[in-house]
Length: 217
Image (cartoon, rainbow, N blue to C red):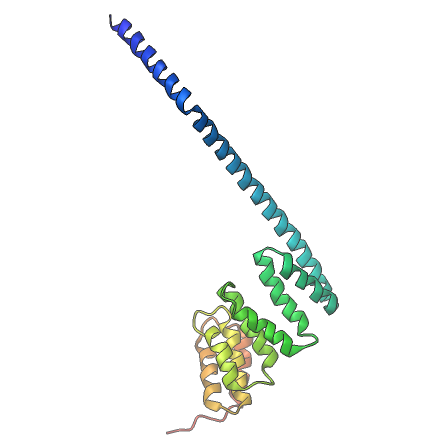
């Protein structure tokens, strides 16, 4: 008797499943199609992005080779083309390199380009700090210490990726302005930072030797 009930239950279940399939099969098929299409589309997107990145990388290398050969006009054009067409990562690098090539013929214009990168909030903080450093390097001999301080102080903090270069440039600018106190302040920061690169530390010590002795109280 129990076997008969089992057969009846199985038949009922099959009938229920058939009714559910007849009612919802179109939705199940559509959902499966959407899942397959979505996965295929994502894979296609990944492939295209990888292809674009590879092409941008090769174009960046070619532009860098032109720069190494001192073909600055051609390199500038090649990097500018990458700025217009490359994926985000290479586009930022190309902006930095375009400004560097412009510096070979027009330092103020290049500094303005670096300033634009430094003020672009869509750019990551390390690249923005690098742009600040590069602009300051170009303007060191022509701008004032207050201007350099305004430019570089954000990059000179203890967590700045380029704090060592920022501090050195600020020390040099203060020294050029005959501001001994500010020069000593930045040199002390360089000396007291255990991560200061040896070469930069040596330059800072040489500049320190040029300063007048600290007055005894």
